[in-house]
Length: 188
Image 1: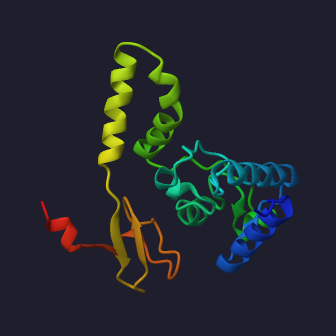
Image 2: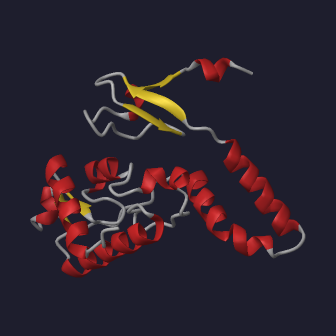
Image 3: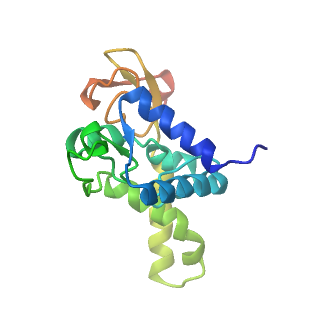
């Protein structure tokens, strides 16, 4: 297995930023901390989950927060930076606009999935209502089934709970995605 280095993480982030017309944060201390967080998360989970959000360690729950996360494009478009502030707009990079504080866009149900997945082992040792609550939450998570979605503009296909906010290929908005029904969906 190849060792993950900060340089590798930086090159990947720079390449992604350049591809999509973004820049990396101009704050060198923030940049270093975020790159270290991405490195640690990739070593820990096997994928570079967002360093500013709680990851569950379960790919299917964290798919939307693998850097660059699903929320980056709408955050940069609206605020000039993503939630972590790793990716920024040209105006922020050039100092024409301050590095903003960006509100969390990730839905609460996805945040709670990560929390429940990370705290399940601790809660298993608890007694009474806490254990029952955790079991109910785990059942709800298990019943969530990913679906096939396609972009009506470019044909991009993705398998997940819900469509991305923005198509990673053509930048079409979420409304341009439609669910693909398969025969398995109709078998009861």
